[in-house]
Length: 419
Ligand SMILES: Cc1cc2nc3c(=O)[nH]c(=O)nc-3n(C[C@H](O)[C@H](O)[C@H](O)COP(=O)(O)OP(=O)(O)OC[C@H]3O[C@@H](n4cnc5c(N)ncnc54)[C@H](O)[C@@H]3O)c2cc1C
Image (cartoon, rainbow, N blue to C red; front, side):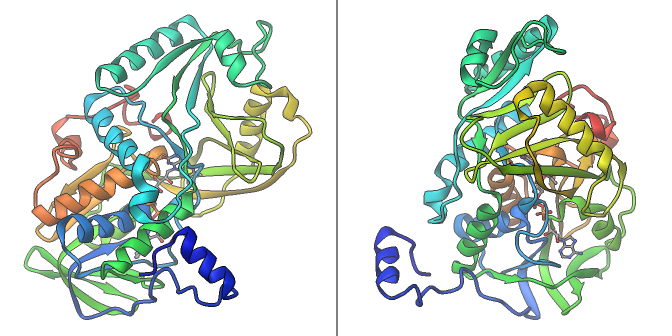
């Protein structure tokens, strides 16, 4: 694999940029692999990359029904943070943050990780108390967190309506300065390139349509391009987890698939220098490197596998954005789209072996699986390679829902829209 560097850029520049090679091969499926990963999203590709790099397991195929980056990994609002409160989540997402901090170098691919901070706004004294509790829990776990006063918030975000007469007055906030954003599809491309360079076959336009079984064990997949046998099959298909796992015989999972939309405005000069979340509703906003404002809000509110959203949510998100930033009143929205979210019943992920031999499950990412991509790949690769969980995903089992050991970060109960 050619290394990207200033020297290769100069050399290619002098040669008219005619010598660049594709970042990954267009692999055709072989009959058999040690490991097949279903789903070429961020999690599937990161898993394949760490299987090869950290565990020396290179006879691996990633089987993707569409194209790399066509799922949620290329549809999200790119927010990266590790501001969790429950110990299982804090430690797992902080591993992710540490991996993000070195990811561009590790992959030799610029994922444009920008630690511009993630600021959560507080509008009531009880919300400030809750933020203090969360911030303290984070700091006790070695994660950075700072409570801000209203004046500090105002200084960070000029355009934000901090007046006491605002509909939802802002009284302070909690910031994680190491949080921020990354270029979503670069993450998919970087992991795909790194995995391919280590021998992984990335097979696009190849839909898994069934599973091969010997006795109760899974020993391969049926695909639109033929049967592929494998000693181990990892499923990392995010919002499609239920239909894909139903093919393996599991039709009652603690998951619901919902739509989540993202919105991008016309480009503006630099206006919002951090990621900001509205505490009196559900809105998150940041500004992309191209200048567009990127917004996200709530789930659309009904189960669906369509990758397009509804209009009431557009109105909802616009109303919340204007409440925070009245100066955006004449801004034009350029694009919006949706992704299919794998909402778990406690808001926390599932990364585990089983429930039958040969099968490994990675799912339940809810609103927040993009930031988890490196940690998820790291832990899922460990689970598949060693046949036992990494200590940081040991709690993220499938049977915790049956046993009553929910990891309910928000204490919201089994209501997907609240996680
Ligand atoms: C609008 C929106 C905003 C979001 N904002 C954020 C955010 O700001 N921060 C954050 O941390 N998270 C965010 N998320 C969540 C995050 O994007 C997801 O949790 C994460 O990307 C899911 O993991 P993935 O990348 O592996 O999924 P995907 O990219 O969806 O990968 C799954 C892949 O499986 C493939 N597949 C499905 N069925 C089959 C089959 N039968 N055979 C073969 N392949 C199959 C799909 O084509 C897909 O490519 C957001 C999501 C959306 C939709």
